[in-house]
Image 1 (tube, rainbow, N blue to C red):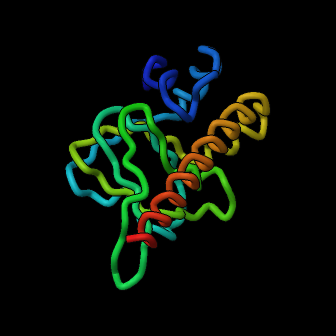
Image 2: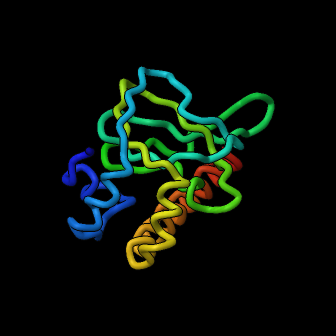
Length: 150
């Protein structure tokens, strides 16, 4: 089982109690990736959510002509893969490791099923996801403005 201290520090699960984190930890597993590994691609089916335990992950979007641009780098305690919780469960970006990376992986299906019977926990998680999405949208808009003004 993944340690509570790691989960407690994540932006996805902040604000949850220890007893709530214990329930989430039961669903979590760890995965390790070497440098340059594609964790998922834009438009792939979103099956999992991820929390960075160690390392860094770049989130990239397609900008045409077989090019991608980085919209954000995710490091320790940051999360990505929120699309596994939001219909149509399709990734809106790609994710690739920038260095040797250890991730905590939560199966989206399992977490969604858990949320159906644990509404207060789900509310906290979805509120955190909303903040994450809002920040990424803001950052993407700023990058788009810079790109257009270049």
